[in-house]
Amino acid sequence: MLELKRRFDVHEQTVRRQLIRRGVAIRPKNAFTDEQEREVVRLYVDRQQTLAEIALLFKVSAGAVRKMLIRRGVERRPQVRPR
Image (tube, rainbow, N blue to C red):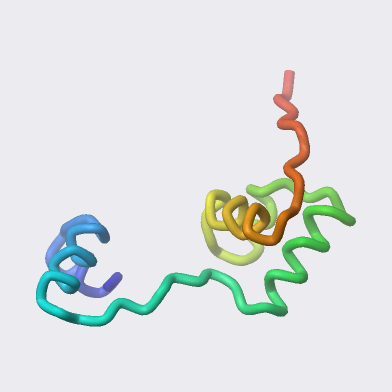
């Protein structure tokens, strides 16, 4: 899908919608393996790393990290804003 997005200069959702419309089975997007998910939880809970730091490490978005933590039942820490 990323290749089609780049090739036709359209949004990923446009590619997804067109593929589904044409009957192409779409694999679910899972940014992490089970082992990576355990490591992300460890980094977030034990090492107190931020979503952004973890996202950079795994080359995914902070939103992908947040969604995975929610799915795993990890309670989100309060957001701290720099002064």
